[in-house]
Image (cartoon, rainbow, N blue to C red):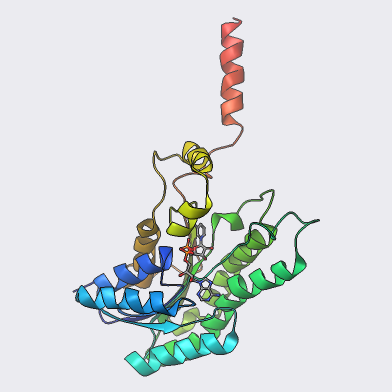
Length: 270
Ligand SMILES: NC(=O)c1ccc[n+]([C@@H]2O[C@H](COP(=O)([O-])OP(=O)(O)OC[C@H]3O[C@@H](n4cnc5c(N)ncnc54)[C@H](O)[C@@H]3O)[C@@H](O)[C@H]2O)c1
C-alpha cells in the first residue's frame, strides 16, 4: 500500500521542477494524479512518464492567472477520477526585471504576481472545497516561499504574495477544518530546479550554499517528499502550518559571523 493510495491529487504547475517532483512522488505512493500546467505538452509528457512507470496520471492545461481555467482543471479532475482529495497549489512566478524595490517596481507586475501567486491559491481552494466536503475531507497544500518570511532588496511583490499565501493557508485551515479539510504550506528556500539553475549565476548559488546550515543545496524532491507527507494521513493532525524546507539557511542570527570575528580579535589582543 502506498502512503497516499487511491487519493486523487491535482497539482498546479506540475510539468517542471517542484510540481513535477511532487506529482511523480505522489503517483509512486499510489495517488491518481492530474498534472496541470501552462505547458500542457510538458504536463502530458510527465503524465506519460508516470504511467510508463506503472502509476496513474493525466496532463491538462491550466492558466493559474485565470479563474475559469482553475475551475476547469478541478472539474476535469473530478470528471476523470470521480473526486479530488488533494490539491497542491504550486504555481508561482517572479520577474527579476520588473519586481523591484517599493519605489521602482512595476505596479502592473504587482497585480500580476498577486493574481498568479496568491489569488490562484484562493480560487483553487474555493473550487476544490465543495468536492472535498462531499468526499468527507481533503488536504490542500500551498507552495509559499522563504521570501514570504524575510525582507529583501528586490522581489517585493513576490515576497508579499508568498507571505499572503502563508496566512491564507491558516484561514483555509480554520474555516474548513471541521469538514476534515486540512490546509498546509511548504516554504522552499533555494531549490535547484531547472528554472533556478538557468537563472542564477554559479557565484550566487555558492553564496546561497555558504549560508545554508547543511552542506548542500535543496532539490525538488526535498519539497516533493514534504508534499507527500502533507497529502498523506501521516500528517492528519497538522493543519494551518507552513513547513520551511530551507536547509537551515534562515536559522542563524545573521550577525553571528561578525560577533565571532570581534571576539576572536579581542582574544588576540589579550
Ligand atoms: N525553486 C526555488 O528555489 C523556489 C524557492 C521558493 C519557492 N519556490 C516556488 O515553488 C513553486 C514552483 O517553482 P519551481 O522552481 O518548481 O518553478 P519551475 O519554473 O521549475 O516550474 C513552474 C511550473 O509552473 C508552470 N507555470 C508557471 N506559471 C503558470 C501559470 N500561470 N499557470 C499554469 N502553470 C504555470 C510552468 O510552466 C512550470 O512548469 C513556485 O510557486 C515558486 O514560487 C521555488
